[in-house]
Amino acid sequence: MASREKGTSSSSISDKQEHNSSRVITIVFLALFIDLLGFALILPLFPSILDYYSQTELSVLQDGFYLLLQRGVDWFAVMAGIPPERKYNSVLFGGLIGSIFSILQFFSSPLTGAMSDSLGRRPVILMTVIGLITSYSLWAASRTFGVFLLSRIIGGISKGNVSLSTAIVADLHSPKARSKGMAMIGVAFSLGFTLGPMIGAYLAMQTAKGEVFYLRSALVALMFAVADLIFIFFLLPETLPKENRVSSVTSGFQAAVDLLSPLALFRFSAVTRGKESPSEENLQNLKILGLAYFLYLFLFSGLEYTLSFLTHQRFQFSSMQQGKMFFFIGITMAVIQGGYARRIKPGNEIRAVKRAIILLIPAFLLIGWAANVAMLGAGLLLYSCAAAIVIPCLSAVVSGYGSASQKGRVMGILRSLGALARALGPILSATVYWLAGAEVCFTLCGAFFLVPFALLGSVKEPLKEE
Image (cartoon, rainbow, N blue to C red; front, side):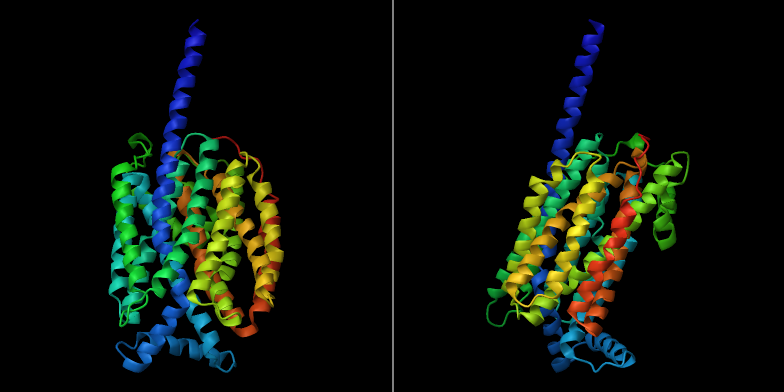
């Protein structure tokens, strides 16, 4: 009788935990979706925005900041011994701006993760959304390149809310809930990057006479950020209990310093402090997973960033056509994540990731060598299917490592590695694209995907530490 009551009690607790986990996952999904809608509005406009500022700065010379950076690109062209061509200059210039945004995320993600390990997830994520509101306000008000760049800088510093969302999911009790949560974060990304660019392109087409073409997109992004702040404030619960937090913000920041050193980052040094250090085997697994994650995003972000320039130059895509392309990518990813990725059983994630990475090789070749839109579409289909699986699955695997008080740091490390990859990937791929052309750039990136594929083959079954 007593054992039956005990079984009923534990079942009731388990059901309650599962209900709470589902509620948290739903709230995180909706909050991140709203955030990414605003973030993705700028994507199809970016080449046009750079063209706009180049024309504005040259004709009006309101602030010479754009011209100063352009001279740096021209200097690189002379050093490389290649006659400067305006269309390729814009690719390299755009890669530089994208890298600045990711470098700032690299610095901010560990600090927000460390703060959340001490203060809790909820107050820190609210602070990051306030930063995004400031960023979009500046973008809406910007009429010079300097102000626009300042808005991107503040946005990069404030984008730690994405790593905090993964930390919130990592706080959940069961591997099944964490795996489902990471997949739903992937779905939020897919839907945000599906609808956001379409909305941005549509708003740019509705520009009134005498109005700056990106103003409406900036104001709508601002509206989404304010709505996100209100939603999180009233609905998001705290997922890190006080007894599971680190003793002080100072100790959290000491660990965060390890995340600002690339060498310490790859060693996962921030989680080896104190008595709760993972076992040697689990730490080795983390290092391999972190390196594979970095290399994957390093290569992937290069294609991701140069893609809009390739279609703009090779196929003369307008902002609306760019928006439709991102819609196609996003809707494909959402279908794969919702129908397949979130149903991958715990323990099978690495196998799924390896299959997806192999799929990216022909995807890159088709896109880089695309002679027509049909060939481009075939490449984008493979690209989208693979991209829908890799990040959610790797995040789910990594979220199983570390104690409860280390989840923020573990996911902060992963996010920092991703930011570092996104900082280096665009500028390097844009340089190769600029010097050797799209075909060589995409072929090389595709071939190098065999490196993270091989690394994942050496990941062993983790030892249980929770």
